[in-house]
Amino acid sequence: MTLPDHAPPASDTARRAAVRTLGPLVHAEATAEAPAAGIDAADLEQTVWLRLLERPAARGLPVDPARWVRSVVRAEARTARRRARREHAYAAGGPVDERAGCPERIAVGADERRALHAAVGRLPGRCPRLLAAMLAPHDPTYRELAGELGMSQGSLGPMRSRCLGCLRRMLAAEVVAPELRGKER
Image (cartoon, rainbow, N blue to C red; front, side):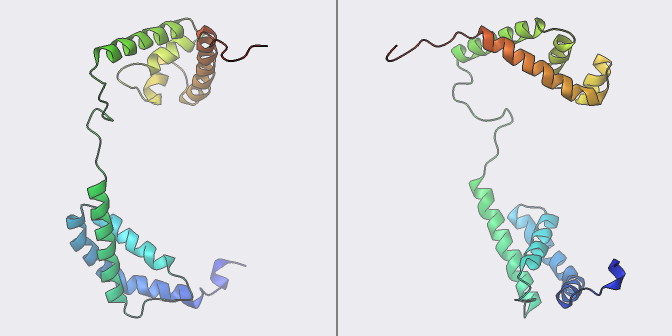
């Protein structure tokens, strides 16, 4: 059986007709409401179409499609405005940490970075070059890393995984085991 052998179900045909007829109205309503809600008109439009397709087939299409479109667009715009009031973007530097400027935290962070770079230097094979390049402050892409190291882009992931496993084992061996607490037998 092929797709043209079957006629689409009646509900599917009705939905397609609704999409054709309601397309301009949905676009106009979403374009009008989106700026006030602080979202992209295309996102709002897509949400309206999703809500239409989520309606159970038993309920069918709305009785008054134009009123339904207006109410759904406005409801989604209200939801977006509420979400925008609740959600706030982090500052450019990432999550706000009250201790970020603390001299002790800066010293501990520098010490941890020195220990990490020292451990990376002791890794076997090509791991030191790979991980040192990945730890570069300019955050290189896999393409840039492959060009810098002279290897294929596809082999970077597996090699990175092996090198990180080796680094984990090395660092775990250097960490002092905690002392026993409680009853000893």
